[in-house]
Length: 417
Image 1 (spheres, helix red, strand yellow):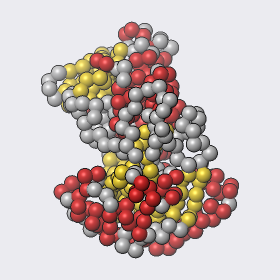
Image 2 (cartoon, helix red, strand yellow):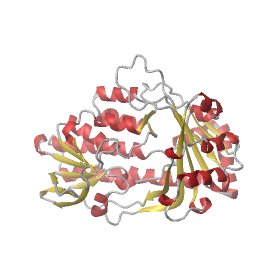
Image 3 (tube, one colour):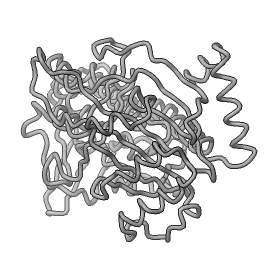
Image 4 (cartoon, helix red, strand yellow):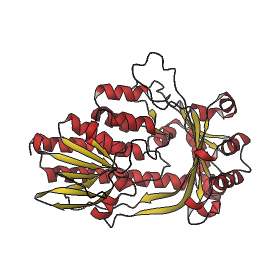
């Protein structure tokens, strides 16, 4: 298939879909993106993503050099450490991170979702179409695939890619047996502006980087700081440089005492429940919830996809959360989607340049993606269970972390896992 004949339609203008579109545009592929939201900022909040080495490599491969540089300059300060504590702020395990310079190729890139979406959208122009709610597709092996939208318009391409998130309608048609299920846990998150008072009262480990706190009754708290260097000398425009402390509290639904419909629970009630469950925690940790405005609260039941084997390849495939949605407890969902984007971009570029057959390229991508994608799902699920253990199991987890903190080889192995 020659370059000028290959056309690709992407459903969903999220992190993975836009990254893929940027890469395909550079390859000269005729690519279009269709997004259900009306604007790039609809339903976006300012919480940050931590782009790992894997995600950073994918972005660097797919973005024009100038745009990647703009992304780096829009990132917050890299973390100095990752810390595990108990709910009284006693140390369990600390990893000191060697790279604090965001220009270092191995450094993480902590970036606002808003900034990332705006940067990934730059230069795409009329490639991205907003206000297009996907309804269904029609495909056949020897013919292009057609995507139909709620407004009765349609788009036809050689390949259709579902990058439409965890509740993917495209997945529902392509793989109706691919399930996403509730884990039984509920997560609540919020944030506080990082003014001098908050900076002074926030525990130092949280100011240094991601901090994971194992509490009683199977409760877990994640906290981190989003802070920025002085922008003097930067060459690019900046987006969303809000400084804040973010936190996420999670526990089993029964521990929260919440009903089946979480969306109906008032945010003030949710904060009150979090504070009540932290009644015997260190005051500095409890203050995070007490000082949080309900307007910043996000609450959701924690869900995970169920692994499935490879399917018969069609002209329709999936990317990111649309297939391998995972819990947030490993923080690798966005990075896995970016890996998908870079992997699929290479496969489609080979097809566009006449170096590979379309179906063979898609089959290779899907098998690769299913392997590492569902491995990430399992890893994230394992961490969720580990962080929410109770009784003797909790004691064993804490003991393991304390031992790892004192045995360098064990600590290194735990960090690489």
